[in-house]
Image (cartoon, rainbow, N blue to C red; front, side, top):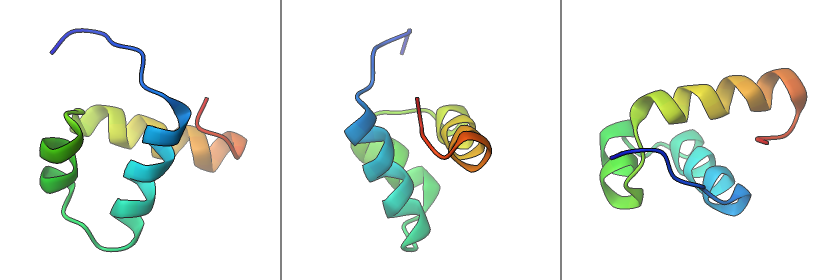
Length: 52
């Protein structure tokens, strides 16, 4: 997969999907992101109130 620039909107969308009950593997498959990215974005959001 390699490093890529993922928009703030995509990150928020992915996190909202996860919060609304989507399965993590399904989100990662549909949006082509890694589970580790999802966990990192959630941690950043919780700590700083923003995903970037």
